[in-house]
Image 1 (cartoon, one colour):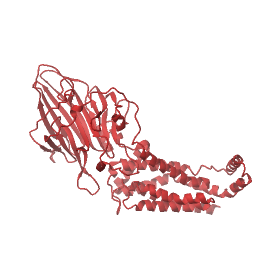
Image 2 (tube, one colour; image 1 turned 60 degrees about the vertical axis):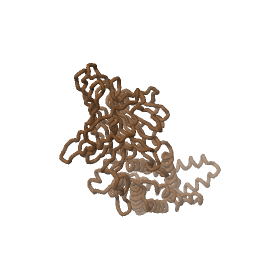
Image 3 (tube, rainbow, N blue to C red; image 1 turned 180 degrees about the vertical axis):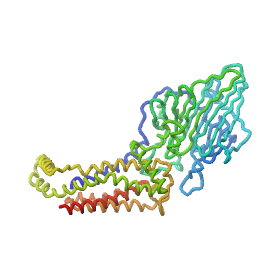
Image 4 (tube, one colour; image 1 turned 90 degrees about the vertical axis):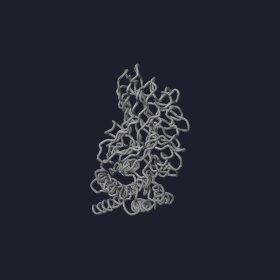
Length: 532
């Protein structure tokens, strides 16, 4: 039963590969770098002051610093900070040990956000608190600054109900006698090293989703860019029409989407105090004397809801990190969503998708057990060959291949279902830890969050027991070598330990998959016995 024993060895190596990936960096290196960078916008570093305004609709709450009009804080009102917490999740934050801000301004020859002398305009507002009323379709929050030459700059934040995209609009009235030239920029900056209180992966062996920068251009629909690259001054300098830039983390994203014509410059830079920045700069815009000009950009601050993000900008939905098996995770998530809309529970949806996947792979499973049964029947002949040519390993291999050919058996036939199931397993893993819809999604009893580990480790233990039962009924009873038998007996224990940190939704999938496998195994083997 060489093939059957190898199932557990292969599976063990596969899970070991998952852990190995967890110890590596969170994503691949992007080697397309350019040392040429745009100016380092140190000028956009926030000045500590009490001049702030507060803006909210029904899903997001923003804190805007009147120096430059940067968004210093953003809370997502529909998402809780932690399971059972009453506090909303804070995506953007400005604290002593952590900075995560969305910044924008006007630079260039006549821009008020001057990157040469590090000045920022101090905007004025006639109110401090702005809230979108229930019967309104839009909330406009204008802040104003007048330059020394009399030029009026009005920066307006536009929010709509149930929307996570915020429109930033600059209305510039050039009352001077000279043509003005400005560039709009949007930038996201974040502390590279997370403080312990924000590091949800601290001490966790599970695979992590990507945290870092990302961008989209004409040449690349979606590219991740590691913080390590930025901190080592291997910065981006890309000219592109349209596109967007973003900062990503598990479940949530912040992204600038330019709304201007012409080529934007996408850049990264390393700021002081362990801070990485990614941004864009628009082409130069001319404003003639005694004329007005409006410049716009969109900012996404919120959960990675794929349908909504796709409607905001092309390829923005690709920021949902499904890893290298995204082409499997995406259709699986769509199927899971359809099932959820029917049953109303993500846990039962996972159970149903398990039944569907096992039904699809049933012909392969049947072929596997038929191959195993034939291999089991050949064991006496294989043993005889090994004894007869015990001193000639090459002859043993030749004789066994002739035997397989004579009996019309593919010795690797038992591996095909394994190769099919492992990618499905991994794609489900990425789907569970990357889809915000499953964040804090309850199932039954003590399982209150299918995207995190079982707090009492009940599901991993049940999974280990089902694996032990499968192993006992199909493998170790036919192993004669005591050492190999001992290793196989420990396999369910090793897997149980690995699965302690896996999302409970994934463990639930594996339990149901094992239970269905047990039923299929009994059915197929009993049918084979009857046909003998």
